[in-house]
Image (cartoon, rainbow, N blue to C red; front, top):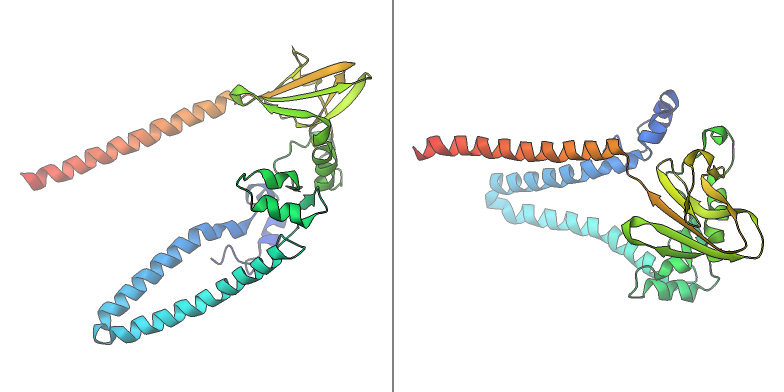
Length: 266
């Protein structure tokens, strides 16, 4: 709990060990380990209190109930405040890191109430990019990657037709009356296999922007780009090793259980 709080000097530690900025981006997520332990500790404590003070168990239960009520009040108040924001012109409780594609709060509210969970993304979209393959030659440059992502990807989506094909492939099509370079709202990674108008592009000759957005040479008329992410062989090997290890641990556990059960039966 302390490690995930603001009291722990993570900025100073990350300054001394810069690698932690990438490997441990959000220390607050360490609460995922703290909360279950706190709940288990609370359950054990209450159980022991009831056993120890059984004649006065009603007092213990009463105090616990009061504590639960005091914990529930802030949560209920938070729910009410969020409901009021949702009904207002703001709609969302926070617009941080979000770009809007409509000026109508009614459309956003209606999309959130829609039975289709993806409808809201037609009107609002996250502009904080995660895991961009920033080229080495621009890593030292000082620029806002969120703005670059918004301009190069989000703002250009309507210029193309997107379609998801079998096998996890993504296809972009567009028509043009001129030739030349065209920047696509596609992020190209090292393992990405890209086809332009049916021709596989040489990965070493693929041009990208400062955030890894793909740049191609378009022709007059219809253009088609198909992208497929090829899983690295090393990852496949490690996945097989992991599965075999879990199966081995399961078999070892069963063998240990059988060994313990046999003496008891005899």
